[in-house]
Length: 305
Figure (cartoon, rainbow, N blue to C red):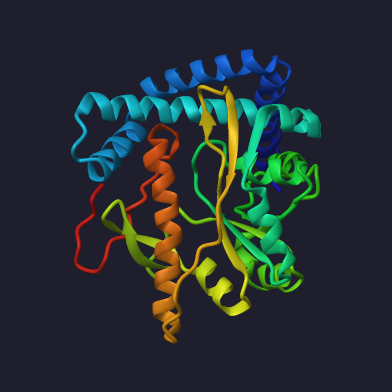
């Protein structure tokens, strides 16, 4: 590493550590308030991200007026601030602290799936506090392995890794994940996957997402069909009335197999994508609308961004 590269690495780490530590020393409610305010400021200053969000919302909710879409989009930035607040506290949260912050519904679904011994695939999306889905499960005694994209800065990566894995979770580098994921499932363990980001045409298949074709990873479906692992949707949205996150663990997703693997992969991918969409419709201001979800287009269709 060059001197300049090392200096940049250290400065980025110092900035990340300062932000996380600074938020982490604030009491929970105050940290949420500060981070929510930061989200509002970021909303006003991020014209490019707002533009992407506005385009996505117009595509997904054409019947909504501009004022309502703007309200949803502001909520997206507030939700990101809230997640920053929660993430900054992970390094010192006890299991009791997690129980005080997170209500859990549907744990029996996960426990029943694990008893089958074929492994479990938990699918989720960038909704609510998605980092809390894996962290809370590990705190509740159900650690899992999940795919991540390693952060380019190794010092920041180690900082984040320590926080994510405090209660027994393991991360898998998505760039070399095939054997590791199969090993997890063959051992009867739990694998977590985010399935709601755009993929290239070679890495995904097109399924409907808000009535628009969206390039979506087929990895989850192939793994489930080949190993017999149950696929269970899990989300951790913020419930404003409760002032808590609610970790919702759904029932296993089921399809009628056709005998054609490609068609079965498409059916299961569509079913899981629909589960994500249903939660987004319930909590529209907590999903990552600023991501170019429909960037990859079917052949011959123009770029919507």
